Image (tube, rainbow over all chains, first blue to last red; front, side, top):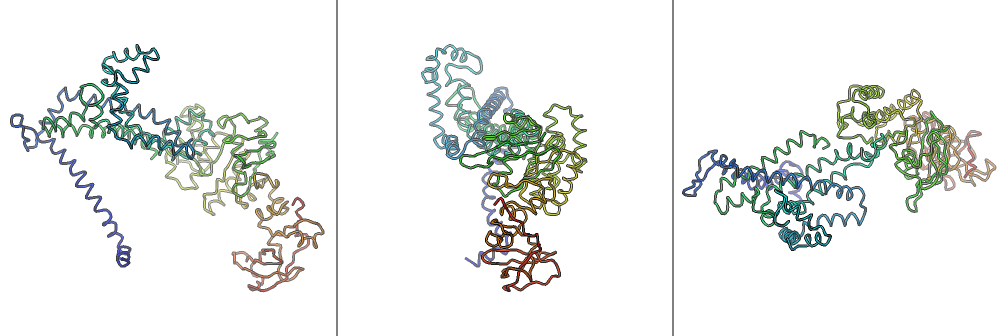
Length: 300
Length: 326
Protein backbone atom coordinates (compact mmCIF):
# COMPACT_ATOMS: atom_id res chain seq x y z
CA UNK A 1 0.00 0.00 0.00
CA UNK A 2 2.76 2.36 1.02
CA UNK A 3 4.86 1.30 -1.98
CA UNK A 4 1.95 2.07 -4.27
CA UNK A 5 1.45 5.51 -2.69
CA UNK A 6 5.16 6.27 -3.04
CA UNK A 7 5.14 5.21 -6.66
CA UNK A 8 2.10 7.40 -7.44
CA UNK A 9 3.67 10.32 -5.56
CA UNK A 10 6.76 10.07 -7.75
CA UNK A 11 4.65 9.82 -10.92
CA UNK A 12 1.87 12.39 -10.54
CA UNK A 13 0.94 12.03 -14.18
CA UNK A 14 0.24 8.36 -13.70
CA UNK A 15 -2.08 9.18 -10.83
CA UNK A 16 -3.82 11.84 -12.91
CA UNK A 17 -4.27 9.37 -15.77
CA UNK A 18 -5.65 6.69 -13.45
CA UNK A 19 -8.13 9.13 -11.97
CA UNK A 20 -9.18 10.69 -15.24
CA UNK A 21 -9.50 7.73 -17.59
CA UNK A 22 -12.75 6.22 -16.24
CA UNK A 23 -14.75 9.49 -16.25
CA UNK A 24 -13.26 10.47 -19.62
CA UNK A 25 -14.30 7.14 -21.09
CA UNK A 26 -17.77 7.65 -19.70
CA UNK A 27 -17.98 11.18 -21.04
CA UNK A 28 -16.31 10.36 -24.36
CA UNK A 29 -17.93 7.11 -25.36
CA UNK A 30 -21.21 6.80 -23.53
CA UNK A 31 -22.14 10.47 -23.46
CA UNK A 32 -20.66 12.28 -26.46
CA UNK A 33 -20.34 9.11 -28.52
CA UNK A 34 -24.01 8.23 -28.29
CA UNK A 35 -24.93 11.82 -29.07
CA UNK A 36 -22.78 11.71 -32.20
CA UNK A 37 -24.35 8.39 -33.17
CA UNK A 38 -27.75 10.00 -32.77
CA UNK A 39 -26.76 12.99 -34.86
CA UNK A 40 -25.41 10.66 -37.56
CA UNK A 41 -28.84 9.04 -37.68
CA UNK A 42 -30.30 12.39 -38.69
CA UNK A 43 -28.28 12.23 -41.91
CA UNK A 44 -29.90 8.91 -42.82
CA UNK A 45 -33.43 8.72 -44.17
CA UNK A 46 -36.38 6.40 -43.86
CA UNK A 47 -37.87 4.41 -46.67
CA UNK A 48 -41.55 5.28 -46.34
CA UNK A 49 -42.70 2.05 -48.02
CA UNK A 50 -40.70 -0.48 -46.04
CA UNK A 51 -40.29 1.65 -42.91
CA UNK A 52 -36.58 0.72 -42.92
CA UNK A 53 -33.75 3.18 -42.32
CA UNK A 54 -31.63 3.70 -45.44
CA UNK A 55 -28.03 3.99 -44.31
CA UNK A 56 -26.89 6.54 -46.86
CA UNK A 57 -25.88 10.09 -46.03
CA UNK A 58 -28.56 12.50 -47.19
CA UNK A 59 -30.17 15.79 -46.21
CA UNK A 60 -33.64 14.47 -47.06
CA UNK A 61 -34.55 14.14 -43.37
CA UNK A 62 -33.63 17.77 -42.76
CA UNK A 63 -35.85 18.78 -45.69
CA UNK A 64 -38.65 16.85 -43.96
CA UNK A 65 -37.78 18.56 -40.66
CA UNK A 66 -38.27 22.00 -42.20
CA UNK A 67 -41.84 21.39 -43.27
CA UNK A 68 -44.26 24.09 -42.00
CA UNK A 69 -45.93 21.77 -39.48
CA UNK A 70 -42.55 20.98 -37.90
CA UNK A 71 -41.43 24.62 -37.98
CA UNK A 72 -44.61 25.36 -36.01
CA UNK A 73 -43.55 22.84 -33.38
CA UNK A 74 -40.11 24.39 -33.10
CA UNK A 75 -41.39 27.94 -32.80
CA UNK A 76 -44.03 26.92 -30.26
CA UNK A 77 -41.41 25.15 -28.16
CA UNK A 78 -38.83 27.94 -28.39
CA UNK A 79 -41.38 30.62 -27.49
CA UNK A 80 -42.61 28.52 -24.56
CA UNK A 81 -39.02 27.95 -23.39
CA UNK A 82 -38.28 31.67 -23.63
CA UNK A 83 -41.45 32.64 -21.71
CA UNK A 84 -40.78 30.02 -19.03
CA UNK A 85 -37.17 31.20 -18.68
CA UNK A 86 -38.16 34.84 -18.42
CA UNK A 87 -40.89 34.16 -15.86
CA UNK A 88 -38.62 31.87 -13.85
CA UNK A 89 -35.87 34.53 -13.81
CA UNK A 90 -38.29 37.22 -12.65
CA UNK A 91 -39.71 35.05 -9.88
CA UNK A 92 -36.35 33.52 -8.89
CA UNK A 93 -34.31 36.73 -8.60
CA UNK A 94 -35.98 38.19 -5.51
CA UNK A 95 -36.09 34.75 -3.86
CA UNK A 96 -32.39 34.23 -4.57
CA UNK A 97 -31.57 37.76 -3.44
CA UNK A 98 -33.33 37.24 -0.15
CA UNK A 99 -31.76 33.84 0.42
CA UNK A 100 -28.27 35.05 -0.50
CA UNK A 101 -28.10 38.42 1.20
CA UNK A 102 -30.70 38.65 3.94
CA UNK A 103 -31.67 35.20 5.26
CA UNK A 104 -29.61 34.17 8.28
CA UNK A 105 -29.06 30.91 10.14
CA UNK A 106 -32.16 28.72 10.35
CA UNK A 107 -34.09 30.96 7.98
CA UNK A 108 -31.48 30.36 5.35
CA UNK A 109 -31.66 26.59 5.88
CA UNK A 110 -35.43 26.75 5.65
CA UNK A 111 -35.13 28.67 2.41
CA UNK A 112 -32.82 26.09 0.89
CA UNK A 113 -35.21 23.38 2.02
CA UNK A 114 -38.17 25.24 0.52
CA UNK A 115 -36.38 25.59 -2.79
CA UNK A 116 -34.98 22.07 -2.90
CA UNK A 117 -37.88 20.09 -1.46
CA UNK A 118 -40.02 20.17 -4.63
CA UNK A 119 -37.06 18.53 -6.40
CA UNK A 120 -37.15 15.55 -4.07
CA UNK A 121 -40.71 14.49 -4.78
CA UNK A 122 -41.71 12.78 -8.00
CA UNK A 123 -42.02 15.05 -10.95
CA UNK A 124 -45.02 13.08 -12.24
CA UNK A 125 -46.88 13.40 -8.95
CA UNK A 126 -46.39 17.15 -9.02
CA UNK A 127 -47.52 17.47 -12.62
CA UNK A 128 -50.67 15.43 -11.95
CA UNK A 129 -51.29 17.51 -8.82
CA UNK A 130 -51.16 20.58 -11.01
CA UNK A 131 -53.62 18.99 -13.41
CA UNK A 132 -56.10 18.82 -10.56
CA UNK A 133 -55.35 22.37 -9.45
CA UNK A 134 -55.83 23.71 -12.98
CA UNK A 135 -58.83 21.55 -13.92
CA UNK A 136 -62.22 23.09 -14.60
CA UNK A 137 -63.47 21.65 -11.29
CA UNK A 138 -60.18 22.48 -9.58
CA UNK A 139 -59.27 24.80 -6.77
CA UNK A 140 -58.24 27.71 -9.02
CA UNK A 141 -61.64 27.88 -10.68
CA UNK A 142 -63.24 27.59 -7.24
CA UNK A 143 -61.12 30.47 -5.88
CA UNK A 144 -61.86 32.68 -8.86
CA UNK A 145 -65.60 32.10 -8.57
CA UNK A 146 -65.44 32.55 -4.81
CA UNK A 147 -63.89 35.96 -5.40
CA UNK A 148 -66.57 36.68 -8.02
CA UNK A 149 -63.79 36.79 -10.59
CA UNK A 150 -65.01 33.79 -12.61
CA UNK A 151 -65.65 36.11 -15.55
CA UNK A 152 -61.96 37.09 -15.52
CA UNK A 153 -60.78 33.48 -15.78
CA UNK A 154 -63.38 32.70 -18.46
CA UNK A 155 -62.40 35.82 -20.37
CA UNK A 156 -58.75 34.83 -20.23
CA UNK A 157 -59.49 31.27 -21.35
CA UNK A 158 -61.50 32.64 -24.29
CA UNK A 159 -58.35 34.33 -25.62
CA UNK A 160 -56.78 32.75 -28.69
CA UNK A 161 -53.36 31.01 -28.46
CA UNK A 162 -53.04 31.11 -24.63
CA UNK A 163 -56.60 30.01 -23.78
CA UNK A 164 -58.51 26.73 -23.87
CA UNK A 165 -61.44 24.91 -22.33
CA UNK A 166 -59.83 25.03 -18.92
CA UNK A 167 -56.40 26.01 -17.59
CA UNK A 168 -55.34 22.37 -17.55
CA UNK A 169 -55.79 22.05 -21.30
CA UNK A 170 -54.44 25.49 -22.21
CA UNK A 171 -50.88 26.57 -23.10
CA UNK A 172 -51.12 28.87 -20.06
CA UNK A 173 -51.41 25.76 -17.90
CA UNK A 174 -48.38 24.19 -19.58
CA UNK A 175 -46.49 27.43 -18.97
CA UNK A 176 -47.46 27.58 -15.28
CA UNK A 177 -46.38 24.01 -14.63
CA UNK A 178 -43.10 24.45 -16.51
CA UNK A 179 -42.30 27.54 -14.43
CA UNK A 180 -43.17 25.70 -11.22
CA UNK A 181 -41.15 22.59 -12.02
CA UNK A 182 -37.98 24.34 -13.25
CA UNK A 183 -37.90 27.23 -10.77
CA UNK A 184 -35.30 25.66 -8.40
CA UNK A 185 -32.88 25.33 -11.32
CA UNK A 186 -33.10 29.10 -11.75
CA UNK A 187 -32.97 30.05 -8.06
CA UNK A 188 -29.85 28.09 -7.12
CA UNK A 189 -27.37 29.48 -9.71
CA UNK A 190 -28.61 33.05 -9.17
CA UNK A 191 -28.23 32.61 -5.44
CA UNK A 192 -24.71 31.26 -5.89
CA UNK A 193 -23.81 34.26 -8.06
CA UNK A 194 -25.30 36.76 -5.61
CA UNK A 195 -23.49 35.18 -2.68
CA UNK A 196 -20.19 35.84 -4.40
CA UNK A 197 -20.84 39.59 -4.62
CA UNK A 198 -18.97 41.17 -1.71
CA UNK A 199 -20.98 43.58 0.43
CA UNK A 200 -18.19 46.13 0.03
CA UNK A 201 -19.03 46.37 -3.67
CA UNK A 202 -22.59 47.42 -2.89
CA UNK A 203 -21.28 49.81 -0.22
CA UNK A 204 -18.86 51.25 -2.78
CA UNK A 205 -21.68 51.90 -5.23
CA UNK A 206 -23.70 53.72 -2.57
CA UNK A 207 -20.61 55.58 -1.48
CA UNK A 208 -20.17 56.88 -5.03
CA UNK A 209 -23.67 58.33 -4.99
CA UNK A 210 -25.81 55.53 -6.40
CA UNK A 211 -29.16 55.03 -4.71
CA UNK A 212 -30.26 51.41 -4.19
CA UNK A 213 -32.09 51.09 -7.53
CA UNK A 214 -29.00 52.33 -9.37
CA UNK A 215 -26.78 49.97 -7.39
CA UNK A 216 -29.09 47.15 -8.38
CA UNK A 217 -29.01 48.07 -12.07
CA UNK A 218 -25.31 48.88 -12.39
CA UNK A 219 -23.66 46.51 -9.93
CA UNK A 220 -25.83 43.74 -8.52
CA UNK A 221 -27.60 42.75 -11.74
CA UNK A 222 -24.49 42.65 -13.96
CA UNK A 223 -22.65 40.63 -11.34
CA UNK A 224 -25.56 38.22 -10.97
CA UNK A 225 -26.03 37.90 -14.73
CA UNK A 226 -23.76 34.86 -15.17
CA UNK A 227 -25.95 33.14 -12.57
CA UNK A 228 -29.11 34.17 -14.41
CA UNK A 229 -27.65 32.86 -17.66
CA UNK A 230 -26.62 29.59 -15.99
CA UNK A 231 -30.14 29.23 -14.61
CA UNK A 232 -31.67 30.09 -17.95
CA UNK A 233 -29.59 27.39 -19.64
CA UNK A 234 -31.28 24.92 -17.32
CA UNK A 235 -34.83 26.22 -17.66
CA UNK A 236 -34.52 26.84 -21.39
CA UNK A 237 -33.01 23.48 -22.31
CA UNK A 238 -35.21 21.53 -19.89
CA UNK A 239 -38.31 23.12 -21.42
CA UNK A 240 -37.03 22.52 -24.95
CA UNK A 241 -36.57 18.81 -24.30
CA UNK A 242 -39.48 17.96 -22.00
CA UNK A 243 -42.29 15.80 -23.40
CA UNK A 244 -44.22 14.81 -20.29
CA UNK A 245 -45.57 18.15 -19.05
CA UNK A 246 -47.09 19.23 -22.40
CA UNK A 247 -48.60 15.77 -22.73
CA UNK A 248 -50.35 15.89 -19.37
CA UNK A 249 -51.10 19.63 -19.21
CA UNK A 250 -52.06 21.50 -22.34
CA UNK A 251 -53.74 21.03 -25.65
CA UNK A 252 -52.94 18.62 -28.48
CA UNK A 253 -50.41 20.85 -30.20
CA UNK A 254 -46.98 19.21 -30.05
CA UNK A 255 -43.73 20.36 -28.51
CA UNK A 256 -40.30 19.22 -29.73
CA UNK A 257 -39.98 16.59 -27.03
CA UNK A 258 -43.32 15.07 -27.91
CA UNK A 259 -42.43 15.09 -31.61
CA UNK A 260 -39.17 13.25 -30.92
CA UNK A 261 -41.04 10.77 -28.76
CA UNK A 262 -43.66 10.11 -31.44
CA UNK A 263 -41.28 9.88 -34.37
CA UNK A 264 -38.92 7.43 -32.75
CA UNK A 265 -41.59 5.43 -30.92
CA UNK A 266 -44.90 5.11 -32.72
CA UNK A 267 -43.72 6.12 -36.19
CA UNK A 268 -40.33 4.41 -35.98
CA UNK A 269 -38.80 7.32 -37.91
CA UNK A 270 -35.48 7.42 -36.05
CA UNK A 271 -33.79 9.79 -38.55
CA UNK A 272 -36.49 12.45 -38.19
CA UNK A 273 -36.51 12.03 -34.40
CA UNK A 274 -32.73 12.50 -34.45
CA UNK A 275 -33.05 15.58 -36.66
CA UNK A 276 -35.61 16.99 -34.18
CA UNK A 277 -33.17 16.32 -31.37
CA UNK A 278 -30.63 18.54 -33.14
CA UNK A 279 -33.02 21.51 -32.96
CA UNK A 280 -32.66 22.22 -29.19
CA UNK A 281 -28.87 21.92 -29.54
CA UNK A 282 -28.86 24.52 -32.33
CA UNK A 283 -31.24 26.81 -30.41
CA UNK A 284 -29.08 26.59 -27.27
CA UNK A 285 -25.99 27.34 -29.35
CA UNK A 286 -27.61 30.47 -30.77
CA UNK A 287 -28.85 31.48 -27.32
CA UNK A 288 -25.43 31.14 -25.68
CA UNK A 289 -23.71 33.01 -28.52
CA UNK A 290 -26.16 35.88 -28.12
CA UNK A 291 -25.74 35.87 -24.35
CA UNK A 292 -21.97 36.00 -24.69
CA UNK A 293 -22.16 38.78 -27.21
CA UNK A 294 -24.40 40.78 -24.86
CA UNK A 295 -21.71 40.51 -22.19
CA UNK A 296 -23.50 38.07 -19.90
CA UNK A 297 -20.20 36.38 -19.02
CA UNK A 298 -18.09 39.54 -18.58
CA UNK A 299 -18.26 39.29 -14.80
CA UNK A 300 -16.95 35.72 -14.80
CA UNK B 1 -16.13 74.20 11.76
CA UNK B 2 -15.01 70.59 11.97
CA UNK B 3 -15.05 68.44 8.88
CA UNK B 4 -16.31 65.52 10.95
CA UNK B 5 -17.51 65.53 14.52
CA UNK B 6 -18.93 62.86 16.80
CA UNK B 7 -20.99 63.77 19.84
CA UNK B 8 -21.28 60.80 22.19
CA UNK B 9 -21.73 58.37 19.30
CA UNK B 10 -22.45 54.72 20.08
CA UNK B 11 -23.06 51.75 17.84
CA UNK B 12 -24.23 48.58 19.56
CA UNK B 13 -24.77 45.15 18.04
CA UNK B 14 -26.97 43.48 20.62
CA UNK B 15 -24.88 43.46 23.78
CA UNK B 16 -21.66 44.29 21.93
CA UNK B 17 -20.65 47.94 22.05
CA UNK B 18 -18.64 48.27 18.84
CA UNK B 19 -18.46 52.03 19.34
CA UNK B 20 -19.10 53.35 22.82
CA UNK B 21 -19.83 57.05 23.48
CA UNK B 22 -17.13 58.43 21.21
CA UNK B 23 -16.53 62.16 20.95
CA UNK B 24 -14.18 63.57 18.40
CA UNK B 25 -13.71 66.54 16.11
CA UNK B 26 -11.61 66.41 12.96
CA UNK B 27 -10.73 69.85 11.58
CA UNK B 28 -10.84 70.47 7.86
CA UNK B 29 -7.68 69.55 5.99
CA UNK B 30 -6.35 67.22 8.67
CA UNK B 31 -4.81 63.82 8.06
CA UNK B 32 -6.50 61.91 10.86
CA UNK B 33 -5.68 58.32 11.77
CA UNK B 34 -7.87 55.94 13.74
CA UNK B 35 -5.56 53.33 15.18
CA UNK B 36 -6.44 50.23 17.15
CA UNK B 37 -6.41 46.45 17.23
CA UNK B 38 -9.11 44.55 15.36
CA UNK B 39 -12.50 44.84 17.01
CA UNK B 40 -11.58 48.15 18.65
CA UNK B 41 -14.30 50.13 16.87
CA UNK B 42 -12.12 52.05 14.43
CA UNK B 43 -13.63 50.56 11.28
CA UNK B 44 -17.16 50.87 12.63
CA UNK B 45 -16.43 54.55 13.32
CA UNK B 46 -15.32 55.00 9.72
CA UNK B 47 -18.44 53.21 8.46
CA UNK B 48 -20.54 55.52 10.63
CA UNK B 49 -19.00 58.52 8.87
CA UNK B 50 -19.58 56.93 5.45
CA UNK B 51 -23.17 56.06 6.38
CA UNK B 52 -22.94 52.28 5.99
CA UNK B 53 -23.82 52.02 9.68
CA UNK B 54 -26.21 54.13 11.69
CA UNK B 55 -25.36 55.16 15.22
CA UNK B 56 -27.41 53.58 18.01
CA UNK B 57 -27.21 56.93 19.78
CA UNK B 58 -25.37 60.22 19.52
CA UNK B 59 -24.97 62.51 16.54
CA UNK B 60 -22.50 62.71 13.70
CA UNK B 61 -21.92 65.95 11.83
CA UNK B 62 -20.11 66.43 8.55
CA UNK B 63 -19.27 70.11 8.01
CA UNK B 64 -21.86 71.00 10.60
CA UNK B 65 -24.68 69.07 8.97
CA UNK B 66 -26.25 66.34 11.06
CA UNK B 67 -26.00 63.27 8.82
CA UNK B 68 -27.92 60.90 11.09
CA UNK B 69 -30.72 60.56 8.55
CA UNK B 70 -28.56 60.77 5.41
CA UNK B 71 -27.90 57.55 3.45
CA UNK B 72 -24.34 57.02 2.11
CA UNK B 73 -25.28 58.15 -1.39
CA UNK B 74 -26.16 61.61 -0.10
CA UNK B 75 -22.99 62.25 1.89
CA UNK B 76 -20.10 64.36 0.63
CA UNK B 77 -17.58 61.72 1.65
CA UNK B 78 -15.99 58.93 -0.35
CA UNK B 79 -14.31 55.76 0.75
CA UNK B 80 -11.30 53.72 -0.28
CA UNK B 81 -12.17 50.19 0.78
CA UNK B 82 -9.87 47.68 2.37
CA UNK B 83 -10.48 45.15 -0.42
CA UNK B 84 -10.68 48.07 -2.92
CA UNK B 85 -14.19 46.90 -3.99
CA UNK B 86 -13.51 47.61 -7.65
CA UNK B 87 -16.33 46.51 -9.93
CA UNK B 88 -15.04 43.40 -11.75
CA UNK B 89 -17.38 43.80 -14.73
CA UNK B 90 -16.16 47.32 -15.52
CA UNK B 91 -12.77 48.37 -16.83
CA UNK B 92 -10.57 50.83 -14.95
CA UNK B 93 -11.99 53.83 -16.77
CA UNK B 94 -15.61 52.89 -16.05
CA UNK B 95 -14.74 52.04 -12.46
CA UNK B 96 -13.30 55.50 -11.89
CA UNK B 97 -16.12 57.09 -13.89
CA UNK B 98 -18.82 55.23 -11.92
CA UNK B 99 -19.69 58.07 -9.56
CA UNK B 100 -19.70 60.62 -12.37
CA UNK B 101 -21.92 58.35 -14.47
CA UNK B 102 -24.36 58.11 -11.56
CA UNK B 103 -24.27 61.91 -11.33
CA UNK B 104 -25.42 61.99 -14.95
CA UNK B 105 -22.30 63.49 -16.54
CA UNK B 106 -21.89 62.95 -20.26
CA UNK B 107 -19.42 60.34 -21.42
CA UNK B 108 -17.05 62.99 -22.72
CA UNK B 109 -17.09 65.08 -19.54
CA UNK B 110 -16.47 62.11 -17.32
CA UNK B 111 -13.67 60.75 -19.47
CA UNK B 112 -11.73 64.00 -19.18
CA UNK B 113 -12.03 63.93 -15.40
CA UNK B 114 -11.21 60.25 -15.19
CA UNK B 115 -8.06 60.71 -17.26
CA UNK B 116 -6.95 63.48 -14.91
CA UNK B 117 -7.66 61.33 -11.86
CA UNK B 118 -5.76 58.38 -13.31
CA UNK B 119 -2.82 60.68 -14.12
CA UNK B 120 -2.86 61.86 -10.52
CA UNK B 121 -2.40 58.31 -9.24
CA UNK B 122 0.11 57.65 -12.04
CA UNK B 123 -2.08 55.18 -13.90
CA UNK B 124 -2.56 57.18 -17.10
CA UNK B 125 -3.27 54.87 -20.03
CA UNK B 126 -4.58 52.03 -17.88
CA UNK B 127 -8.25 52.88 -18.53
CA UNK B 128 -9.01 49.94 -20.80
CA UNK B 129 -7.75 47.28 -18.40
CA UNK B 130 -9.94 45.15 -16.20
CA UNK B 131 -9.28 45.28 -12.42
CA UNK B 132 -8.30 41.59 -12.57
CA UNK B 133 -5.38 42.52 -14.83
CA UNK B 134 -3.85 44.89 -12.29
CA UNK B 135 -1.46 44.29 -9.41
CA UNK B 136 -2.52 44.96 -5.82
CA UNK B 137 -0.80 48.33 -5.77
CA UNK B 138 -2.42 49.38 -9.03
CA UNK B 139 -5.87 48.36 -7.81
CA UNK B 140 -5.27 50.41 -4.72
CA UNK B 141 -4.54 53.45 -6.89
CA UNK B 142 -7.66 52.85 -8.99
CA UNK B 143 -9.73 52.74 -5.80
CA UNK B 144 -8.10 55.99 -4.74
CA UNK B 145 -8.77 57.63 -8.12
CA UNK B 146 -12.38 56.44 -8.06
CA UNK B 147 -12.93 58.14 -4.71
CA UNK B 148 -10.94 61.30 -5.50
CA UNK B 149 -12.62 61.94 -8.85
CA UNK B 150 -15.79 62.67 -6.85
CA UNK B 151 -13.97 65.59 -5.20
CA UNK B 152 -15.06 64.55 -1.70
CA UNK B 153 -14.69 66.98 1.17
CA UNK B 154 -13.63 64.07 3.36
CA UNK B 155 -11.84 60.98 2.10
CA UNK B 156 -12.22 57.84 4.20
CA UNK B 157 -9.56 55.16 3.91
CA UNK B 158 -10.17 51.74 5.45
CA UNK B 159 -6.80 50.01 5.88
CA UNK B 160 -6.00 50.80 2.26
CA UNK B 161 -2.40 49.63 2.50
CA UNK B 162 -3.09 46.43 4.42
CA UNK B 163 -2.87 44.12 1.42
CA UNK B 164 0.36 45.58 -0.01
CA UNK B 165 3.85 44.31 0.62
CA UNK B 166 6.20 46.30 2.84
CA UNK B 167 8.12 48.14 0.13
CA UNK B 168 4.98 49.21 -1.73
CA UNK B 169 3.33 50.15 1.51
CA UNK B 170 6.10 52.56 2.43
CA UNK B 171 5.98 54.09 -1.03
CA UNK B 172 2.19 54.50 -0.88
CA UNK B 173 2.45 56.10 2.57
CA UNK B 174 4.62 58.82 1.08
CA UNK B 175 2.31 59.23 -1.90
CA UNK B 176 -0.86 59.41 0.17
CA UNK B 177 0.69 62.01 2.40
CA UNK B 178 1.83 64.23 -0.44
CA UNK B 179 -1.50 63.77 -2.20
CA UNK B 180 -3.31 64.88 0.92
CA UNK B 181 -1.10 67.97 1.25
CA UNK B 182 -1.64 68.81 -2.42
CA UNK B 183 -5.42 68.41 -2.38
CA UNK B 184 -6.03 69.78 1.10
CA UNK B 185 -8.87 67.29 1.60
CA UNK B 186 -9.55 65.89 5.06
CA UNK B 187 -8.30 62.31 5.18
CA UNK B 188 -9.65 59.90 7.79
CA UNK B 189 -7.52 56.82 7.82
CA UNK B 190 -8.14 53.53 9.64
CA UNK B 191 -5.21 51.26 10.40
CA UNK B 192 -4.00 48.70 12.89
CA UNK B 193 -0.38 49.47 12.00
CA UNK B 194 1.01 51.98 14.47
CA UNK B 195 3.99 52.77 12.22
CA UNK B 196 1.63 53.76 9.44
CA UNK B 197 -0.49 55.92 11.72
CA UNK B 198 2.51 57.65 13.28
CA UNK B 199 4.29 58.34 10.01
CA UNK B 200 1.31 59.70 8.09
CA UNK B 201 -1.17 61.31 10.41
CA UNK B 202 -1.38 64.83 11.80
CA UNK B 203 -3.31 63.41 14.72
CA UNK B 204 -4.02 59.88 15.90
CA UNK B 205 -6.99 58.51 17.83
CA UNK B 206 -6.13 55.24 19.52
CA UNK B 207 -9.17 52.98 19.84
CA UNK B 208 -9.72 50.09 22.19
CA UNK B 209 -12.97 48.36 23.18
CA UNK B 210 -15.06 50.84 21.21
CA UNK B 211 -13.61 53.90 22.94
CA UNK B 212 -10.93 56.42 22.15
CA UNK B 213 -8.14 55.83 24.67
CA UNK B 214 -6.01 58.76 23.59
CA UNK B 215 -6.19 61.42 20.90
CA UNK B 216 -3.16 63.47 20.02
CA UNK B 217 -0.24 64.08 17.70
CA UNK B 218 1.93 61.07 16.84
CA UNK B 219 4.62 62.43 19.20
CA UNK B 220 2.08 62.69 22.03
CA UNK B 221 0.83 59.19 21.57
CA UNK B 222 4.28 57.74 21.12
CA UNK B 223 6.24 59.54 23.82
CA UNK B 224 3.47 60.37 26.26
CA UNK B 225 1.08 57.40 26.31
CA UNK B 226 -1.73 57.92 28.80
CA UNK B 227 -2.42 54.26 29.54
CA UNK B 228 -0.40 51.03 29.62
CA UNK B 229 -2.49 49.81 26.66
CA UNK B 230 -1.29 52.68 24.49
CA UNK B 231 2.29 52.38 25.71
CA UNK B 232 2.25 48.75 24.66
CA UNK B 233 0.16 48.96 21.49
CA UNK B 234 1.50 52.14 19.95
CA UNK B 235 5.12 52.15 20.97
CA UNK B 236 5.75 48.59 22.09
CA UNK B 237 6.90 50.38 25.24
CA UNK B 238 7.81 48.73 28.49
CA UNK B 239 5.16 49.23 31.13
CA UNK B 240 6.56 49.44 34.65
CA UNK B 241 3.83 48.54 37.14
CA UNK B 242 3.07 50.93 40.00
CA UNK B 243 5.22 49.17 42.61
CA UNK B 244 8.21 49.15 40.28
CA UNK B 245 7.82 52.73 39.06
CA UNK B 246 6.87 54.43 42.32
CA UNK B 247 10.37 54.50 43.92
CA UNK B 248 11.60 56.48 40.90
CA UNK B 249 8.62 58.67 40.06
CA UNK B 250 7.16 59.14 43.51
CA UNK B 251 3.66 58.74 42.06
CA UNK B 252 1.19 55.88 42.43
CA UNK B 253 0.90 55.32 38.68
CA UNK B 254 2.47 52.92 36.21
CA UNK B 255 5.19 54.30 33.97
CA UNK B 256 6.19 53.73 30.35
CA UNK B 257 9.77 53.27 29.25
CA UNK B 258 10.71 53.05 25.56
CA UNK B 259 12.85 50.01 24.69
CA UNK B 260 15.52 52.25 23.13
CA UNK B 261 15.76 54.17 26.44
CA UNK B 262 16.37 51.08 28.57
CA UNK B 263 20.15 50.81 29.10
CA UNK B 264 22.01 47.66 30.07
CA UNK B 265 25.08 47.57 32.31
CA UNK B 266 24.37 50.15 34.98
CA UNK B 267 21.30 51.20 36.95
CA UNK B 268 19.03 50.55 39.88
CA UNK B 269 17.24 47.38 38.58
CA UNK B 270 18.51 43.87 37.95
CA UNK B 271 17.22 41.82 35.03
CA UNK B 272 17.68 38.29 33.81
CA UNK B 273 18.25 37.99 30.03
CA UNK B 274 15.62 35.63 28.57
CA UNK B 275 16.02 36.27 24.86
CA UNK B 276 18.23 37.98 22.30
CA UNK B 277 17.14 38.61 18.72
CA UNK B 278 19.07 40.39 16.01
CA UNK B 279 16.93 42.96 14.15
CA UNK B 280 19.50 44.49 11.80
CA UNK B 281 20.07 48.03 13.02
CA UNK B 282 19.76 46.95 16.63
CA UNK B 283 19.38 43.89 18.79
CA UNK B 284 16.34 43.27 20.93
CA UNK B 285 17.09 41.93 24.38
CA UNK B 286 14.21 40.56 26.45
CA UNK B 287 14.65 40.62 30.20
CA UNK B 288 12.74 39.51 33.22
CA UNK B 289 12.76 41.46 36.42
CA UNK B 290 10.53 40.83 39.43
CA UNK B 291 7.84 39.17 37.26
CA UNK B 292 7.80 41.97 34.67
CA UNK B 293 8.94 41.41 31.12
CA UNK B 294 11.04 44.26 29.71
CA UNK B 295 12.50 44.84 26.28
CA UNK B 296 15.64 46.77 25.43
CA UNK B 297 16.89 47.78 22.01
CA UNK B 298 20.69 47.70 21.96
CA UNK B 299 22.18 49.69 19.05
CA UNK B 300 24.66 48.12 16.66
CA UNK B 301 28.25 47.61 17.95
CA UNK B 302 27.24 47.92 21.60
CA UNK B 303 28.29 45.04 23.89
CA UNK B 304 25.57 42.41 24.29
CA UNK B 305 24.85 40.36 27.40
CA UNK B 306 24.67 36.59 27.21
CA UNK B 307 21.50 34.56 27.46
CA UNK B 308 20.68 33.85 31.13
CA UNK B 309 23.05 36.53 32.42
CA UNK B 310 21.86 38.96 35.09
CA UNK B 311 22.49 42.57 34.17
CA UNK B 312 21.90 45.96 35.75
CA UNK B 313 19.18 48.10 34.10
CA UNK B 314 18.93 51.86 33.97
CA UNK B 315 17.61 54.79 31.98
CA UNK B 316 18.40 58.41 31.31
CA UNK B 317 16.71 60.94 33.57
CA UNK B 318 13.31 61.91 32.17
CA UNK B 319 12.92 58.72 30.08
CA UNK B 320 10.33 57.33 32.48
CA UNK B 321 6.86 58.56 31.49
CA UNK B 322 4.21 58.48 34.21
CA UNK B 323 0.77 57.40 32.98
CA UNK B 324 -1.57 59.35 35.22
CA UNK B 325 -4.82 58.32 33.49
CA UNK B 326 -4.24 54.67 34.28
